[in-house]
Image (tube, rainbow over all chains, first blue to last red; front, top):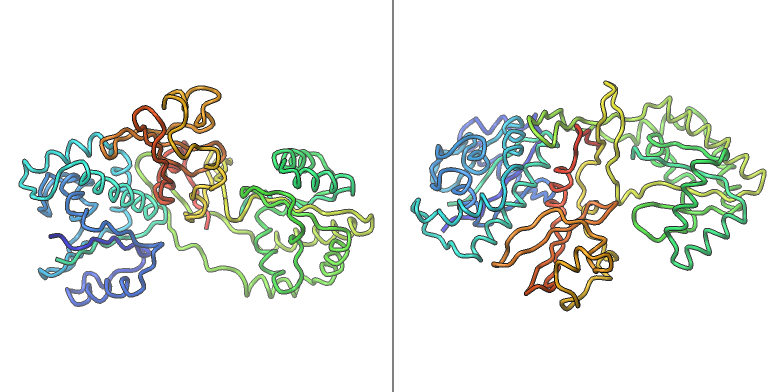
Length: 161
Length: 287
């Protein structure tokens, strides 16, 4: 079962330590979690798994699918190599590019991708209720990308595994 | 704040009229009359961008905008200061020196907006930080306000404070320094995109009496005053997303067996995204 996903945004001048190794990344994200500033974070609950698959190539592979849509969840720069957490980093230019791509996603397109997930090995539920759950979190995540892009901020996506 | 902020001198007759209309719930009439006065009266001062720093400087000294509310909607603040309050404000403003104001201005100015320019390659366009008023402009506006209050006090006038609400800040269109049209949009605040409960009062709790599409399209349908911005499927049913003029909040209405079903308020963050999609010009983000 997927852990809970959260995007955190932070100013463009910050986050340099994310490239200083696993411990530094964990400490940086730990600080964001500690602060838990609801204005600058967006949760995706467990829906991030299906959202990424829909935006990428149907799989959870980091390199799957095409930029920029595949960058929203797992396509950023991996800044933690351990198996217990996912921490992906997006700089402010990436955020703007992904936000613009997410703006164009329609529900029919997303819906077709979602109901096609079993063909790519997805073992989660793919009924109407699961779709509503996934689309609901997607809409919030997309709006958060737009807001973060407008504010010129960077993002990290985090999930426990 | 960056929006029109006006102090207007009023006769007792105009003040009574606004009070009566407000007491009768005729806020649209109040707003129309105030707009008319703001456009035509010579006895007024507009402080606009300088207002927010002036207000900050006067906090703890003497308020010049807190009067009797004569408007019940959330989109504007319209407050009436009676001649006694006007005289007190005039006396307080007359004591303000440039040095005193500068000290307060410098100690109470907010930190600079951290948001850098972010050129988005496609719609809804780039966002840039907005300008802020300098001290010279603030002092000049305060001096005009002091003169205005002194005149209003001498002639025993009421003063009306009129501005867009700080709690609901609509975007506005303006011409940028490059001569091109741009949209000035306040930075995201959930309250600017939250559904006004008053707007839902007329909506039916249990199904309505007409077919769903008629409720939307017919002039006397309950959803006629709302504007459709999209349709989507949820729970296997069609929902319509709607907004209402002069606002940036949205509701989702379920088509339940051709009658109005559940009505849900759209999350403010998603409403922000929807509002940004309607921006047809480059956007400047205000702090």
